[in-house]
Length: 300
Image (cartoon, rainbow, N blue to C red):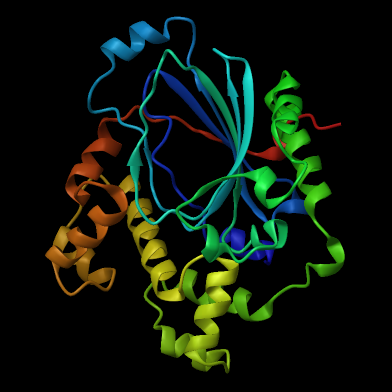
């Protein structure tokens, strides 16, 4: 993909809102910006995690929500001192994160920008949507030892550096030709906030709807219609997160829904609760700046 698309779409996750686990996102270096949306790191928060878990407010909920991205996930199970590396395909449904203090786990993720994972995984991403696969099954020889090496890095900057070197080792530069059609399609979907019509997209790119569907399923993981629905949902999340007062009927019309019930049904499909309830979650959750610029680290 084109790293200019990064400025058009920044996926939002509903993480880092509980007292029992920290969550940080880190921007990629310029070299890998065309593939990676961000790196992220999550770990149990402090020594009194069990106490925090017992007293945590029920309103502080961490969620994983559809964002059009996919991830390589490094995990360190600290109780058993075991390591895993998995690939998590594009998700079409949300889930609430549950924390098991008997199984403390540190996680480091490479969150691929839409279309970015295809050039790394080298497998049609539609085959992997809604799935969690051992990375060894997709790319042999990239198992738990890689995760062990990553978590051996003491600093977050070191982990990011290792992740970038790992990604560079997976990329075959001679086959990563830019796909102009997918760049254009993503551009149209982002600028329209997910309201672009599939037929219109196909006409603009001078291809059939069937060809467009197949290309989008390979590169992103779902059809352009389903991907557009996720982007529209993400655009609403951005708006809800930043707003203190919302005119819900107007919001439904502004985002291309037939009416408010239509908006609520679609939103619940991707978030798990209604937009009004989601807005309360964002308002009640303690606000943190979880996003760090890669350049702020001392990467030497």
